[in-house]
Length: 64
Image 1: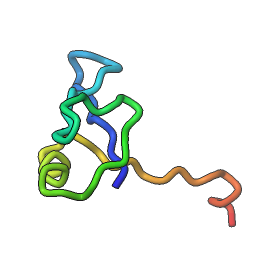
Image 2 (image 1 turned 45 degrees about the horizontal axis):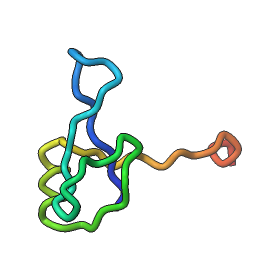
Image 3 (image 1 turned 90 degrees about the horizontal axis):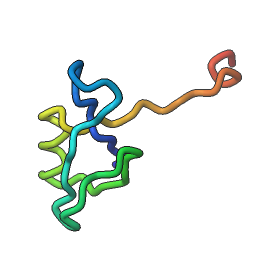
């Protein structure tokens, strides 16, 4: 599943939460990453630390 770090909140506009990848020990990139649907990532999702972005539909596809 593809995830993005969640926004940090109103106090820091434009920043995102720092979420560590348990396999690499490195922070999840601000641009997101493909991660396995393991209990760790599902907990991060349930806690609101990461988000799954909605697919972007093109304007042409929306009109059809």
